[in-house]
Image (cartoon, rainbow, N blue to C red; front, top):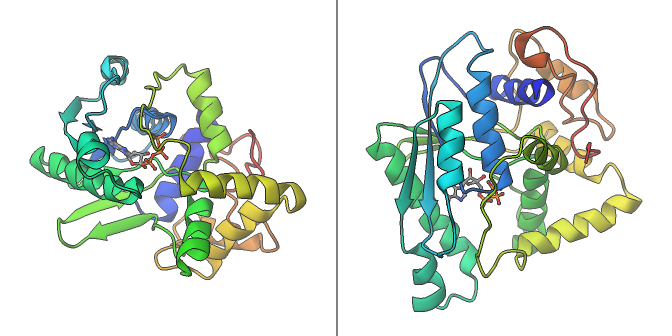
Length: 280
Ligand SMILES: Nc1ncnc2c1ncn2[C@@H]1O[C@H](COP(=O)(O)OP(=O)(O)OP(=O)(O)O)[C@@H](O)[C@H]1O
């Protein structure tokens, strides 16, 4: 927990994701990633010298068979208000429109519903559960499927709505998140989406797994390239603890690794974490 919080804190500071007094809504799908993010951001409130307000919002896709009551109980335990917004996004996509490529429309509608819900509740920042592996996969998806160099950004300000999206788990690998969710018994809600595990993302995830056997530094190199180039918004901003220097010292396959977790503000941490080489 301390190590994970340290890496999240480092990411927040590197990309200046949180300002004192921010009101942040965590988008909670019920999956392991967003439940981990929620747990870590709730815990981190005790360790950072600034305060921020948290709420959790689920956009219920109307797919049926999803019980979010364990998520509501987790939020109660964490002291985070929770709301679930019912929508018909699932039926619209799969039954009415019978979309061949459902994922992009679904993501667009889900994001729209989430932004609307948080604005209605008086929040203007949303934390999303994208992690290190998501970033690498998204970069490769843009390259291989769209012929573009790009990825989502650590911090995105959406002009049209005034919402700022932040992604505080970019220094955590999927393996770390999976282990954390299991060890903390997080109430992962079964996802009945018909497209789950049959997506382009899944295809790339499997390709990365195969390539990583021959090129074990592949993920670290891709992540490091985004920071070194840097892609828009991916350059880390220097801050008093000088992590930019640390992150860029590790060229040659190691750039992008988060340095020692700093034990969530309780002094230096307990070992190097190498996202992408992972503690699966
Ligand atoms: N139905 C939803 N309601 C609220 N937030 C959501 C929802 N779906 C996704 N999000 C937010 O968007 C992020 C990215 O969505 P994506 O579908 O890629 O999730 P994921 O990588 O499978 O993560 P998770 O394990 O949290 O489902 C999630 O981590 C979460 O923060």
